[in-house]
Image (cartoon, rainbow, N blue to C red; front, side, top):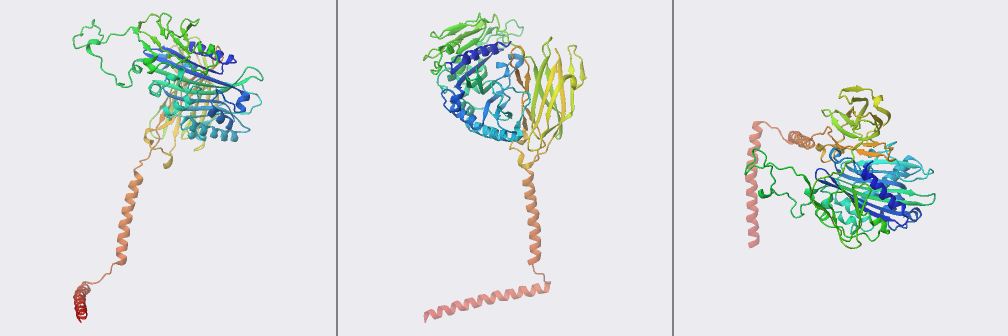
Amino acid sequence: MNTFFLLSLILVALSVGSAASNYHENLHLQPLPPSNLLASFNFKSNTTQSSFEKQHFQYFPRALGQILQHANTRELHLRFTSGRWDSESWGSRPWNGAKEGGTGVELWAWIEAPDDETAFSKWITLTQSLSGLFCASLNFIDSTRTTQPVVSFDPAGDHSPSENLHLLHGTLPGEVVCTENLTPFLKLLPCKGKAGVASLLDGHKLFDAAWQSMSIDVRPVCSGPEECLVQVDQTVDIVLDIERSKRPRGNPIPRPIPGDKLVCDTSKSYHTRDTCYPLEQTAEQGWSITELFGRSISGSCPLTDSESSNEDAVCLHISPVREVRSSPDSVETKWTNDFTRCFSLPPSIPFDLTVPEQASAAHVPLDQPVLHAERTIVGHGQERGGMRIIFNNPSNEKSVDFIYFETLPWFLRPYIHTLQATMTGPDGIRRQVPTSEIIKETFYRPGVDRERGTQLELALSLPPASTVTLTYDFEKAILRYTEYPPDANRGFNVAPAVIKVDAPQTGRPIYLRTTSLLLPLPTPDFSMPYNVIILTSTVIALAFGSIFNLLVRRFVTADEAVALRAQTFRGRIGGKIVALRDRIRGKSSKVE
């Protein structure tokens, strides 16, 4: 079982099982190869169902609670993610992918409504309200970006059978996650990021990470028929580069190492005074919370109402022989798995954790993912293309059953009849197999132009030690002139696919997400309208000028032209004589 996931289950049991534990927070740190660190922040706030319905909020954020009540939302899951999780180097995802979203913004919720039309109306109210709360573009999740998954998502809370719930799902793969989303996230916490482990969350460090994900989950939790809580679970997962994070903020650019501090491999034949081959570092890098985050933890949050919830405020998943130094006022607790150490936070004294550099002796085993997935766009040209999805089962003994769910925009029109499957078995021979051998069940909802996207859900079974490749063709639509964004030549974002893997041993599914795709569409030359306007204006000016000239010009013979010219000359001389005479007469009358 995933060690990180096991630890999270224990922390959930401690936070939910205690009646006095209305607010709980913890930080989990785990070094990752080659020189990275996974930092997972988790915050849980509870309120009773009756208090929630009466709008009596104590630890539960009022701004979020009122939005959920107004939109009749019984369960909410919101994700802000950027970067890519390197499963080959870092192993399985934290929380088994349950708190991870696709690149950009992902939202799904269970809304109580009598019919689909009312549910969609409440869904639009929910997205617009969350857009203003989190300073995100969630208001752009319209009908073309909304789907209704069938088997890809299960409710995480305890719901009554009498509730008429509708599941709606939407994504914004092109949304850029930044500090504007982190600030309202921290404002939902009871201590507002001023104390406790949340005091480490700084936008400069968070968004400089190789991968980061912020999640908000709201669900009902019932321990009895009349003992129900409404729980909000906020999580921040980041992967920091230790060497990059240790640079001071005032000097973020890496500087060359001085020559006298270089560690060279002198056994190389070409090693000279001015030629150095770097020696591979065998010792594990040292780090501290202050070096990585630029600050220490500002004590514990005073609103944690149970002393037991503070015993595991900071947990470190590291080798048992590795030296770890903590603040003198903290209490260390070791878990039974020999790889986890937890520390309590002093009430009002800054807390720091230091792991000095040490020769690597025993490494913490990483849990390997149960499935590898990759999705790419293939083909060439501006009209047609293809989708290729590769699944790899690393296990040599067990097959993997999973659900593949993808949402395609309406301007990408797939041809499902072209779906083909090829499989590479343990013998390394690649062969084409019938899709019925791999795909057990299919749910397909075709898209409608400018109304909804395409929804595809596949139930697949992957044999042990095999690789399956699915391919299908699609056609690209031509958009209207006003439907192109300002950066149309960059391409259009296609939302990541969601993979739900059954895990009977844990009782909770494992979620994976592929990377988002960039789809090039036929893009017109946007300078052509201006060229047409200029050319049209020139033609009209020439035509109008010629016709107007023909209409107003007088045509005469050459003799008449000479006579008219002479008359015109005599008339001008006569006019000047008359004007001169009148001027002379006028002067004479004034003298008299």
